[in-house]
Picture 1: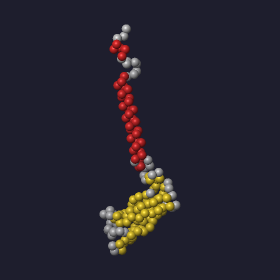
Picture 2: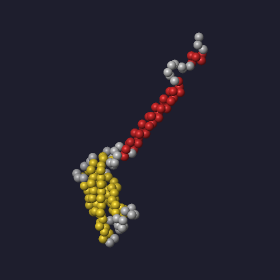
Picture 3: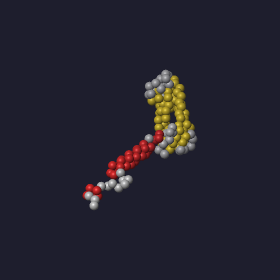
Picture 4: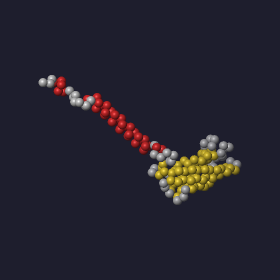
Length: 142
């Protein structure tokens, strides 16, 4: 007849005991955590979804801008021209003009782009342009 210790032992063939169940549980939790982290990162970092194309909410777009300045004494006029294309037929593009050397903001212009892919116009420079020239950048797209 079996003794008391033998009847309480869990030594069925192939079970591995509580240590194996604990290792399995830890592995499953680690894998679940890694999957959850990847999902959160994909939602928070827009660059992971489509490389090289900025994303605006659910819209994707490609935009380029160029500018030139004409100066007369301490004043200047900036001519801005650009293109935008994407998933929408309407964009609001804000362009910022900076002094290349000092990065001082010289002008800001907002364009409503509807039914076309081009935008442009002129705006006065709010400060004298330095000898290094200007640079334009798209500051905001809505």
